[in-house]
Length: 369
Image (cartoon, rainbow, N blue to C red; front, top):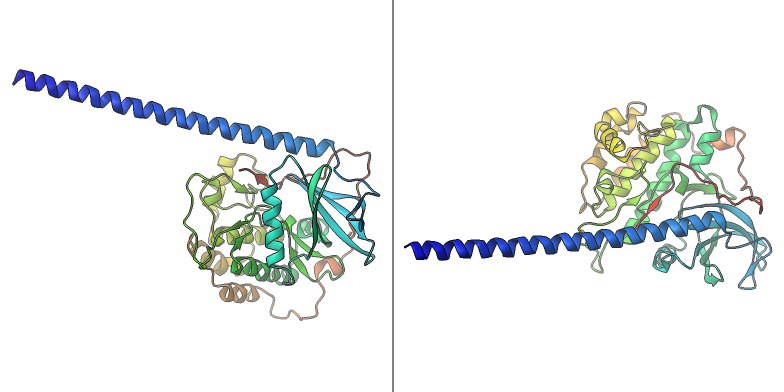
């Protein structure tokens, strides 16, 4: 008996050794993963830093012997946006360019989405794609000012209910087209919703740089991945995004809701909060009625969005109807939008060549692998 007990004890010790070795291996794997993530962060930071120092295009540059650069008009994340003139059609257009050091797959996927949605209402038309000495670029239809800029120019820095829900209904319709084609936006926010350059009553959804195909070839929702990076912009991202969960159509709608609240209220409860942990706590506290306290008609929409999960296919007809119910009862179909009623700067301002800084705001997207 003693010898059997001794053998059992030795086996138990061996088992503990194996378990200990397994744990050590797991720790090593985690360390390697962290090292890789740190490399990505450093590389991304270097790319973003280079963006602020060097312009990739200059006035007078002509791409494809056709598109003549006029100047820098904006940027964010990795990209720089330039105003250009199509020397063939004599029309203005926009050039979005990312440095060659950035991941080309992101721009390829954005181009793919724009091609799939080409001709759809609310999506800028893609005109050309190419490579310049310092970056890869997309030439596309020029759109006007974004809703974040316009809100700041309005009285009380808010968009009225007579304009807000009509505008956001257009965004919802465009988002439904993207989802229907199998793509998520993953960075919906006020600065990615723009009026038309010519028709300022038309609203466009732009910047599909963080897009992902979430439906498979059979139009089924793909199985969620584990341990994904954070996607989106802190202020507007869903709690799932904060938790590094794979995102679905429901998460785009959370960002849509936060966007609508900010444009109508002038801010979100966490707008001035910088800590991600504090933002999470406020997002957990402000839901449904509390979130929609200043826009109570939005409560039903907020409750519907809250009821959705990763696998949900949103009922867009219901969403459109709930948004239409938010409009004032005496609203006329031909009524002007706020930016038509008030004096707002609608043209893009070309930034001087001497400036080395891009226009930055606190709503810059987090772009991680």
